[in-house]
Image 1 (cartoon, rainbow, N blue to C red):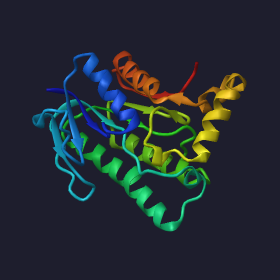
Image 2 (spheres, one colour):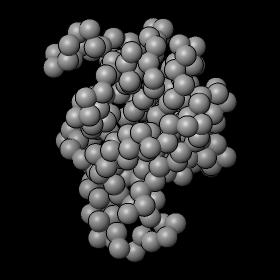
Image 3 (cartoon, rainbow, N blue to C red):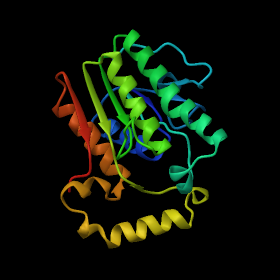
Image 4 (tube, rainbow, N blue to C red):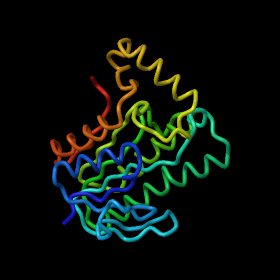
Length: 216
């Protein structure tokens, strides 16, 4: 049996999570949009939001997917972007989790966002919060939501605009001022998020819901 079914292994945090799984010699199966030449074909299944296959049995499900947004779209989204964002970050994530539950998978690990709240006036945080609420309602044995601040790590240059550079510069500059409850808003390396997510899972497999923030 696989230890993990992983959606989003080609993304920033998902890639680091897969590296951690490999380093610990755990069994995994990837759900990808294109075949990965670096992975054995038997370890991957193609999927898209319109053709989501039934999931094989496994101990846990990992979801690191998300609709790509520019920085300004985190603050304000046009209607067409709202629809696509909701389709991926709420509808698709929820559907994957439902299929996992039907397959008998009892644990789920998901990358969410700091400030996620279904009552938020910010659409991005509202959808993330709604996703968390939907996942809770499914009835998993244990749920691990990682709610990181801005993720640090190598990105395609097309995804790094002036706003991202400013966030990372000022975030690092003012980092010592982020104390107490503000710590969770600090910039954080995606690799650390992946490690914390897996470490939290391995330490807390009993019935629980674990919210993972940056606390260092």
